[in-house]
Image 1 (cartoon, one colour):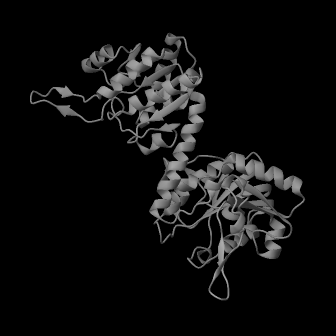
Image 2 (cartoon, rainbow, N blue to C red; image 1 turned 180 degrees about the vertical axis):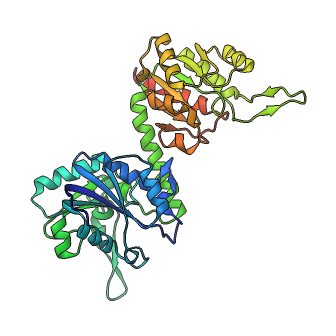
Image 3 (tube, rainbow, N blue to C red; image 1 turned 180 degrees about the horizontal axis):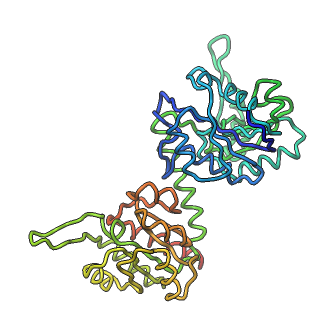
Length: 395
């Protein structure tokens, strides 16, 4: 038993078994394992002392610890709490019997749309509510009907004679299962995640989603990518320079050779047009690549790049030098890369982007995951985003 005493802790149970989607909790979703979304939301909540992830799987444990945060503790859970028939309460009660804390923020691992703002807002409301528990709800504006004893149906939440318009319809609140807050003592005494006087925190309507079928993943991934791009778009208006890698971004990462053994690269003309339009809009452009070839020099000259650095191993230092040469801050640069050697530059740039076929390590940290692949219009796509953002600042 852990003898340390905490205040508010997050508890996220994650079991390895899943009949609908094998190892669902660590399946990649919008560039990162599913469970990482809820863990990162918890880490972003300043009130949480420690994030406990309980699992029966070494594979999941490794996935969780890869986040590298000292505020995460991976703990085991007994086999009886990991069966298909076991309730979430069984894992929660086991946790409360072993961990000393004042309150538990019970988070479902399958809640990727949960944010740190949600958790901070919910905790603030709970503290001032004088209630015993809090749960997350979403507002559904649907007309609900129910059967009667005579096999007819009747409306449950509206009058058909005065059918309200959606904008005037208050709808109904539904439990989305994202998170719950209760004191440890209440959980142990009632055997339930919520009890006593219960208040709520309302999440956006789209947060009501189950990740049980492949179509659910496609919808959720679209929502997450749209959210990430929206956040990045807020910063796009400050960008004045695009810096790009070559292989896997301006090219398709293929290695082509002629019969004479000459190396060839496949570039995309649409990227060239995008860079031309970007230059006309007043943006600067640059290339940082680990390769050092004549063909890249020729392509860069044709596309009129302002700055070109080839044969670069340390892309972090190169990006700093390029920013100085351009007379810009790093926050004014968008960097687009596709592989692990681009990560230092991606992490430093004001906004980062990657092609749709970038490696998973890059997708996890890039601000914008483009819909186009490397060499298939990825640079043209990001040029359009920059031009659009610049235009919106003048409207």
